[in-house]
Image (cartoon, rainbow, N blue to C red; front, side):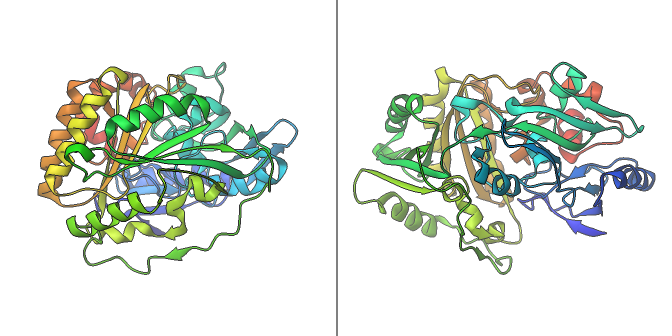
Length: 438
């Protein structure tokens, strides 16, 4: 057995991983884990940032080797695959046939089971909703040996509780999804600088209805008239071009940095350079889809740049009527704190409802930032950000969280009790223990 960590490496809780390579090994590994520890948790490729992927017992069932394509209909775009297959693997198989993932997060290294369990979303939430909106069925193995074939019509409660349910209702064996047809893997991109937060909202209101994808980078250190300045990107699949993932050169961070690369000085220099790198205010060009969707994947093991203490991501969504004022207040608090994130993302979420009971996105605006783990400064800043989110009835993202209070989670996700009622008694994460029992 090996040791695995969450992507943020905070909290630092190495997990003892029982690896399974075949579906008929899952029940045995589960039995051994629960016999030794009482409870366990499924663990894919470890791309969850906080403690939602960490077992309360410290022992997980590692499913990454369950990565086989079971069935594919390239006429209809319906694909069934084991839970450990990565989204990048699916893309590599599907794109040559003219099919694309309908929803993808910011990394191709997330697994299919993880995408379902966290009900991931992407740059086109305003058009296609969350990943769960495109799930047709899946197989769920319970600790008592029961195997459930879940669809919106059959085992409907387990279907809804598992999509976004953080892996707590059973171990996901395979998932069947509906892909989206495309004519090219190239993305036609419009990139526009905006000078402040009002500029973001103006561009979002103008361009979101016209494009499949939209997202913005925001300079979280901007202040005064430049508060919330950034770069807006909108994109659509090209009408013609290649249908394949392009060969991409990657680099690897060779070791964990002794201290974080980012500090107030380096952040200001990097943010200014990124904001100014495009000479014209507006530019139009095409890029490969993997560069557009997964820019961070070009730097392997990039989480090492945050140092031995790791990092926390703060991601929230704010309702539309409060978004402008609340985000202005949040960005001001971040700028004043003297800490910040180069990886700061703003995007508008649409009103497409997820089938999952604990799905994070809702109509409004989402803000996501990474912070090097510094206990005292992060605690002070997060308390302030939490208060703003709480006041406007927003919510935080469990898949990225390592600090949310139980009261905030239970208020923002009132259907948690329905998920708890269906939770497999042999599955328990540190996140669930932290937010539902305190």
